[in-house]
Amino acid sequence: MTLHFLDENQENIQWFKKHENDFIKLRQFFHENPELSKKEFTTTDKINALLESWGIKTDRSFLETGVIGLIKKGTNSKRIGLRADIDALPIDENTDLIYKSKKAGIMHACGHDGHLTMLLFAAKYLKEVADFDGEILLIFQPNEEDSAGARDFIEAGLFKKYPVDAVYAMHNFPGAEVGSLLICDGPQMAGTVGIEIDIHGIGCHAAHPYKGVDPIVTAAQVIVALQSIPTRNMPATDSVIITIGTIHGGTAHNVIPETVKLTGTLRYFDPKIRELTKQRIREITEGICTAFGARADIHLDDGYIATTNHTKETEIALKAAQTLFKSEAISTEKIPSMGAEDFGFMLADQKGAYFYIGNGPDSSSNKLHNAGFDFNDRNLLYGGAYWATLAQYYLNNAQS
Ligand SMILES: [Zn+2]
Ligand SMILES: [Zn+2]
Image 1: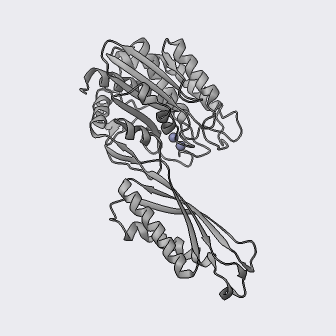
Image 2: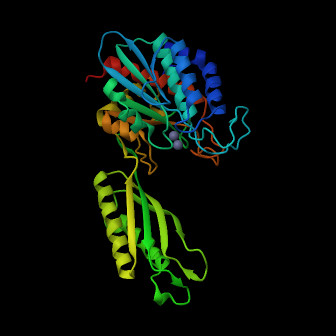
Image 3: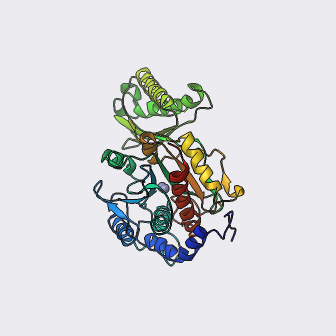
């Protein structure tokens, strides 16, 4: 086992090692009992019961699922938020694990079982052992995968009731060594816009297309032309992806249909680029439809916003990491992804940072949202110890 700790004999690390097996069992319990977004009822009950059993105050008043824990020590009014997501995915698990999902069609394929267990591990240490001056807000957030539980939590008044000086989240990262931390400033995950385009033509016999307006030929032009937006309407350094994921139209080989429906997704980092791209999608689609005698209904729905780290809070997370881990276990290389993450809503509302913990080398199954995925239990020790270190470091050192 490669150990990344600067000094393994430190008391805090000894404590985490002593309790490691209990939390491995706990993580495997959550893995065995996954629940879909907004249905994390037994997961929430279990987290709540554990927090209370350790004497940690809880608050479930915000959403139907998910729970807040509060640990206060000393007199400082500073408060740090630590967020873990708790939901699973509608995927049928394909592993031989003894703790394989007991629920057909549902599994923890994104490692949220591990995220919530790392935070529980840190919570027990912070409550029972750690020395700090201030308050820690433990955010066990539901519904990350489906429809932005982070935004729901904020809209339900989370940060109005418990404002924080900074909020942090950690996601596992297949493709980096287990226990290594990846922390960098700036954009982390992309924002999303849902694309829905209905192209209306005039249906007719396939042998007499001049008597109608063919929405299939029109749609084909639109799909190709939209791909010119990222390379011809903005600097190449501004990342944008436009993907049309579905095309539906037609009922028979010898009929030109009335309509074709296209759906897809736009991914971006900069809101100005999002607006420009939306404008170009409209102009190109409407222009082509007009030229072909067709008509378009275009719906562009803003989804997740980009997840962008704040500079000072990222630096604090890095400094905290340097007190615990050897430098070779910490990477500051930029790794923005066109994937999306609802923690962006928390970082738009409060200061903070989102970072990654390695989940081992890339393989055919070590991929997020893969039916063979499993969170690496060695990360409970590293991630649990790091959460606790970050909270203490922030409350004891950072100047607001
Ligand atoms: Zn996911
Ligand atoms: Zn995830």
